[in-house]
Figure 1 (cartoon, one colour):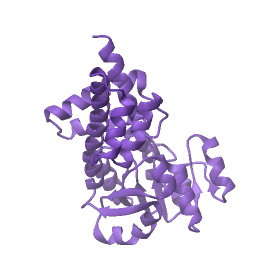
Figure 2 (spheres, one colour; figure 1 turned 90 degrees about the vertical axis):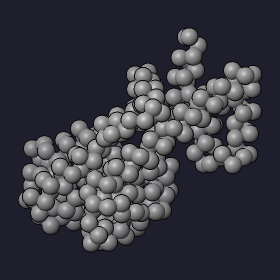
Figure 3 (cartoon, helix red, strand yellow; figure 1 turned 60 degrees about the horizontal axis):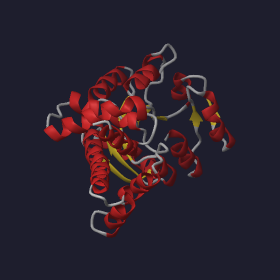
Figure 4 (cartoon, helix red, strand yellow; figure 1 turned 180 degrees about the horizontal axis):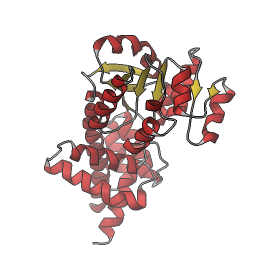
Amino acid sequence: MGTPMAKNLIAEGMNLIVYNRTKTQEAPLKQLGAKTAESPAEVLHKSDILFIMVSDDSAVAEIFSQSNGLLNTDSSGKTIINMSTISPSTSIDLASKCNDKALRYIDAPVAGSIKQASEATLVIMAGCDESTFAEVKPLLEILGKATFRMGNTGNGNKTKLAVNLFLAYLTQGLAEASLFAEQLGIPSHDFLEVIGAGGLNSPYTNAKGNMIRKNEYPSAFALHLMAKDLRLAIENGLSTESGKVVFNTFQDAKEKYGDQDVMAIAAYLKENKSKK
């Protein structure tokens, strides 16, 4: 996600300094003119605004707290925009620690995956004060088609957890409906043609339906990340029966299918059904 987002900033004339824990991942951006740094602290020291896009709370914690991390440098007055999907409580804690260092922190997770990141059509949900949001919104608008301030710190992450809960329902629902159609003797290809022609059609059901047709699930949004987001939702108070069902399904599926696309839940359900 971070690489195509960075490419869009470069395309708009922004001067970028990039850091990746896997140094080979920096190469495409270096070719486009980005400079590289040896640590998060160096990026912050040399930049006015720093974007973070990593996978989970532990990766974010490392970026902030390691010996050469963001909280271990004197870079007061800078702004940190964390676009990772993490726990709201983590964002609130980091915002407090940043404030102690005279840094500004924004949680700004996104809806969308690699395709939307590449096309700059992400939907961005920010948690911060109004003045900070007004200042960074032009940059966020380079990355997405819609940018919303959802309230103060943590509210971006809270919104994202609710969005991904809905996404989990859609994903598992499409998988279960397709499997049920097959159980009734209706080929999944024919069933998905019907879905695609009606009011239930959407870019999401179309793209994920193609994965079901091919029984191939190259990762756009990895299943283990959805399992992580549902765990965060449970930890933040999700208690509905349907919420518990999707949580349990994705936790069970992640061991075998975690590195495949979230739609690989269809393969997991089909496999699980055949064992009963």
